[in-house]
Length: 296
Image: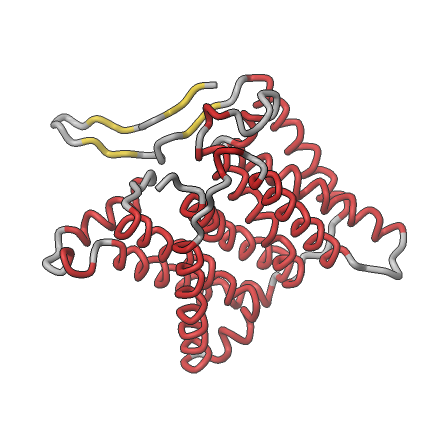
């Protein structure tokens, strides 16, 4: 495997412009080919089956997003400890873990959709997809609890992050409903999930930077927090608050921008919202697991 610790563009002067997060790992060629074949195969089956994509299906995808993020966090804690067997370890580095999660989730979805087409009288795809994802997440938790490196979990700050995020999400989404009822009426559940996912990402990142003392791998959040650090209030309130504000603003703007599209094109709209939710919830859950399993 090849690890990309940093990727930057060198200007004429001494400044560097980072392009991608640090810590990216390129798996061996055989794994790349396997992931490519898996992606093409699963995509082809899903397109052929044309499964329903409703709001409840987006909700059913949430456990799978958490599975992918948690699996990558276990890989990050101590790659040298050999948490995963060598034969599958390259599948859980970044960015391979995103493709691995898609293949697993899409494969299960395709099988469930096929079975639903065989027996149309019982359409339980969303329920079963969510249930299998939840079982996989619980199984991953049991697996982690059996590892010597992870026996001393410290979930305090992870719990605090979730406790803070819930009222923030409720307040923001109720405020949106009060100001623009029609937008929230169109977005409904998935709109709230977008706000929750990105609020949790922002809040966990702020806690990591200001409380736990982690470092930010992604260049854009790091630039936002560098800006916050240059403000006079940085010594009092830290630097993560500005990232939380930016994440909430982006989530609100996305819900406003895509609510009508969600109503006009429900299949594509729900898929877009699922992707947006994953972009926030994936990093957030990754942070929660890393906080809980940190060494100190």
